[in-house]
Image 1 (cartoon, rainbow, N blue to C red):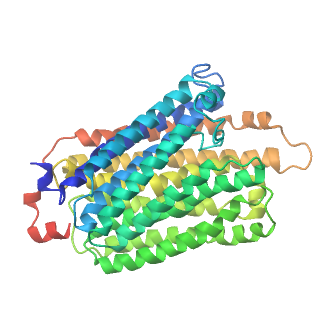
Image 2 (cartoon, rainbow, N blue to C red; image 1 turned 90 degrees about the horizontal axis):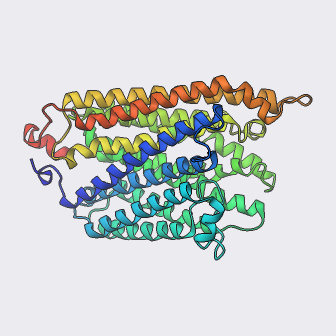
Image 3 (cartoon, helix red, strand yellow; image 1 turned 180 degrees about the vertical axis):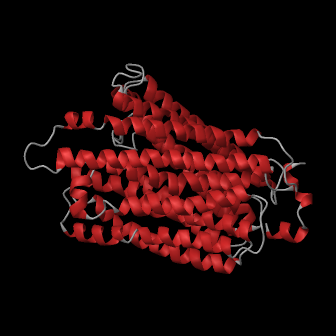
Length: 475
């Protein structure tokens, strides 16, 4: 069966290379993550070929880049269908894909092949000093390339939305994607004053992951639930607006929980504590929303794997971004936990629950249609569902190990007023937790490979002509 017989708009096919690149980069991120975990317990592992600082840059940068590929692919898939018109320029979308992929690959090669100081010298960091900050280590040409790709992408998506139908999903998605591009501009601001430097750095990092990315998350989840449940769009739109309003209110003012101890005024301890304590609310609402929509579904969609991923996004997002964020967000608690392994536990579970899972949800829903079918075979979906549980269990083991390590770290190193252990002595006491974390990471990798294998599982797929036309119209 030809792909265009299932896809409503031929230009949606440009999403496919974005999804494939995202998954390959995802695998690279996890492999480097396991390598980092081993370096915690085997100090000279891979040294001097891939020292810890280089591996960490690659691990975190791959996370950001593959999620961006996922978001862009999702937008290229969703917007033509929601706008009821072909993408404004599929050729521009493919050109930007290759520019972004090549720039990202060259940057990773630069991290691994050249000492970082030399890389800064070679890429013009003396002209505009932007390098050297966590998550924003990219050389100046890469940062400029990201801006060019983001602007071209927004132009393409914006022109498509303008000439077609406007829906709540596309408008919220476009707002989130525009915010993503705007806040990245703060990565070019690198003041010599350390307080201002950290403040602008959090404008990128926090207002991405706890602000505009949540709009993208909400719109992607709403789209999949519209398609898989058949619930009236008006009902889902109302939920979406309420959730994103809470997400923006708590996320923007919740930035204050990063301002506690970096030299900004003391009132941020109150603002940050109060609004950060409210940040779990939109994630709890998202969980209720997802389960409520599935419970009220008007039909059984043939792609039940996508429904599982959607529900998993809501639950794991609430646990990671909501609950694990809340346990150390109040300023008197954060005084002890800031930068500890508790922070790492929250970061891993929040990214997995909120963003990794929603990208996989969209890929799970869209990729079968990009391959000429409404849904994968029952066998393939069963493998896919197993991958969800294996990855989630692996992540759970990792997060519990990091949480235990963080609590012990705080108890030994930070709580005592006398006789506190040194940092390295404390690390020796955490080795058991670090080994458990590695076990969780390897389990996660097995789940990831299980997910990849689902694309190659045979069986009779659900085709367009096996679904009644009324249901196909709803899908």
